[in-house]
Length: 312
Length: 312
Image (tube, rainbow over all chains, first blue to last red; front, side, top):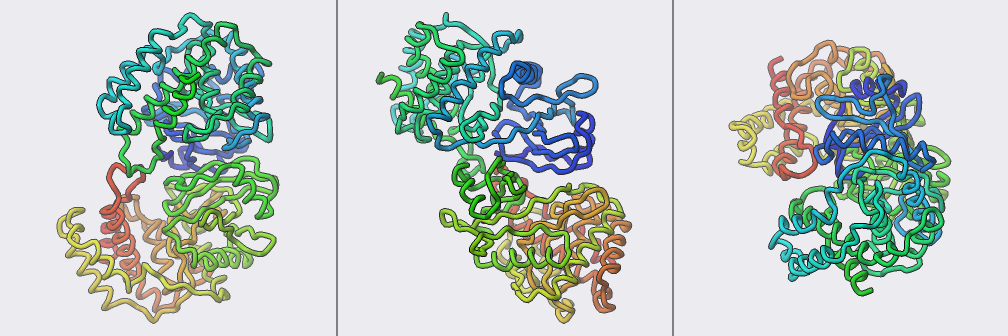
């Protein structure tokens, strides 16, 4: 949660003008996401989020991400669009970094979702999957099943510094999922990170889905499993609330639907979702200095979620 | 530059309502200042900065700071006001922390001021000093001349780790200023930190002076000297631009004025201003881990400014 790149206001005014957004009136660096630098920008032609892509996002992926959000918006999903320059580009290169200007959307991320809100989130995810069917670009999932063994390997023995036995538990899960992973289920472009932080709501309605920077081509129902795992528990991974999980699924099914095979494999997909976040959080935990001013997210919250799905 | 305190959106909505600002529509944590957590908040009754005061601000000082900004706004200064609850309070206690809701002001902090802009800044400072004459509260300056010896002492030998000879240079300056400090010049409540970051501008006009959290009762012309030292150099403390410094003074004199004694002592006051920022930046430099995600500000930029004034 930091602004890594400071843009002098005079130069930001130039960028905003180049995106056809008029005259810059105000700009505040915002603490949103850990990947990029973001500014909340007011200009005479509207409000926007100006994003400076930092090293964790590959500039080669930007056409995919930014075309995707435009495509979803064009197809009626609550997704803010990227602004284009007169030349048609969705990014501008500024001092070697790519910059985009994305519509601002009102709304708040909920901390304690109600079933009605969860239902709306499931439905919005269904809308995304419906619209994604006509999206022609693709992007491999760098954090998918093929990468888990490798990521566990890189964390190595240090995993036991987080909790004794964690390394072995993860190795066992990798083996289990490798054997049972339903790789032949329908595939699609998915959001892959639809946590409450990435959903803005006004009351019980979804006003915006944001932060598509993990979007990739993957087993489609995995997106539903990720969303289920991200929303249905307390932050620490305890206190599964079936009324939330059920509402996510009900909303999704109303808008899109799950096949019988997808439903049968749901707990396997959810275990994979938990393992993915357990591994990346463990990696970040082991590689972020404890005194750095970023909040390290507890990896064990996803071990607890994993055990919930494994017990089903 | 970080948000230290996360407020769940449901609780923030309650706070915004308690301040009489209507329904919360949007909230983004912003990377502003290093002292507090700040959110840019949209509500049905307007836009605000919601501030959570963290440990570097003494809660006992808040009535002073918040009454001051209201007083300055009442007297025509471009200063955003604090919102009050129905009970009249300017802060609400939330989980042991004080929270204020301050009007949002449009405008941008300039990185490369022009003389016209510098003149407007000097004039705005003059307006503040004019209005401060009728402000009855007072607050001692914890970073004033009396504290410099002590702060230098606490930095100790480590100062030479920043630059060899720095400790001796600072000791010499403390002694010099102790001997020549014009403590009997007129006193007033001053801003004490009027850097470009704390001035929002629209074109050549000052739209807002912000961040009064170093405001205190002090030799009034010291405020002018701080502003002069903060605006008239490149960020690294080189490249003094007399056209900016002169414009600051011209704008100030037009609005308020300097006595003969204040003018005669101006370079001493400016040396004191540079020493204050040299010392606090050195302290922060020595006490901030290099890998923390906050930008450490270069203390030597103020040694260079100090030498400029000392050579006059």
